[in-house]
Amino acid sequence: PAAPPIPPSENLYEILAVPASATSSEIRAAYLAAAKTLHPDTGSAPDPARFDGVRAAYDVLMDVERRVLYDELGTEGLAAIQSLRDRAAPAGAAEDATPSEELDFLGDALGGDPYLLSSGPEPDEVGGEGDGSACPTSVEEALANLGHEDRGTRYYAAWWISRFRVKEAEAALVGVLKRSDDRTAMGGYSLRRRAAIALGNIGAESGEAVEALAEALSSTDFYLRYRAAEALARIADANGVLDAFGGENGATEKLAAILRRGAEAMSARQAGAGAGADADPDAADDRFDLSNLDEETKAKLQAIFKKRNVASRETAKRMTTPSLNVAVDADAVDEPYEWVLKALGFLGHKPSAQHAEAFLEHPVPLVRYAACKAMFQLTGEAVHAEQIVAGLGYGVEHHYSQRVLIRDLSDVGYVKGATAMVDSPMVENSFKFLALRKLLVKALARTDEEAVEGVPVILKCLDRLL
Image (cartoon, rainbow, N blue to C red; front, side, top):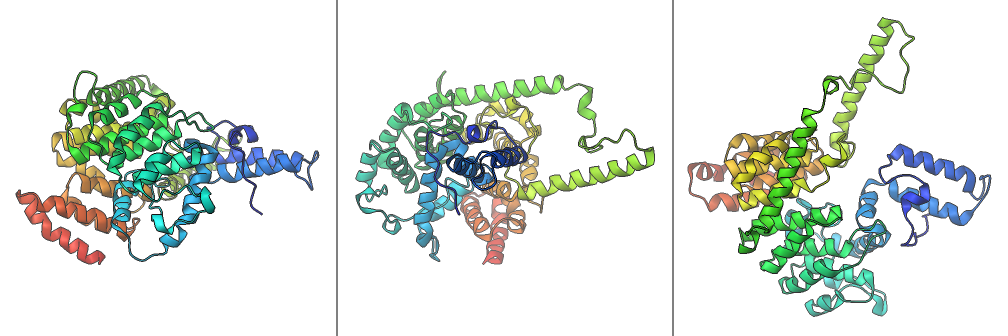
């Protein structure tokens, strides 16, 4: 049977007595230890209620997708997303996507959070229970629900506004971003994050929106900083360089300062790496003591360990969520560098090129490729776009990362990447089609030789998909 719901006040990591950074193995070990004591049938000190809580926490934290949702949104947000998906099931069965679903497909799913921003239900296909349904039925109701007393209703209103690109909500979203005090179990500002996402998706144009997002870049909530940088990138992509981006304390300068500090920190870490940086991480396995073995046997085992570890890493690229299981120092990812780089690229902030270059060696793949994208936009050097193209080969990166790379190539209008986009075997054809269509639109708007010659190639690629 399914585990019972978890009260919003409960912290899943505390229930299992593990840190938020715990690995799957540590979570499983904690669950088994608790089960030996609390299990109602076999435990040494049976406690059915506590065991149900332990089981529910284990179910969430052992599921990568649900754990990511919980870390960002808490138990209430996790329940809200699941409710949306359950309600969206009938809509998901439809064969034809609406225009707004198409926009979500390319604008959200490819470039944003793959779990939170997937296509949701159409308003008339979302059920409710009497007067308790949180789904707005009009723009006016959605705006009113942003101030509703129920936290879930407020969150759903912000999601709905983002989903349907309600530009009339810009001022209200700015108010939510500045003042909402809704917090997750982990202390994050869940509704502010959703307001930032919505401002990016509607392509906010006001100075107040850009200023509020720039202010959010200084928040103590990492995920809010991430969403603010993402929104600024989307706004710059949609609207170009607005006046509000400028100024001594404007968004552009704040983004550039974050990138500069990150580049300086990376240089300092590299300078202090020491001789150990050249050690072979695959040569041994610290779970086994090989000291008492003869040299021939030890060499054979080390070769086996190395082969296994290499294969494991290659499998992880295809099967593991990006950025998980990547060995990096905590301060290497303490800022949303991926979207900071993309925002500065869309803004054409050429002084940032010297700092973006440092991120071409970043250990997190999506940050590294964001640096390639920014460098191509800021310098025009094709070598950086070709690095993105190289990431589309089978097994080179996780399939979600490859969706992002395909979107990035269409964003920058790199027509020479069309063939690699369609040949990418790990990405669904629907993603490729929408990205290639965007690439075609960009190519048709240009008159240079590369674009003119690239149009027939893109059309052939689209024909192959069809």
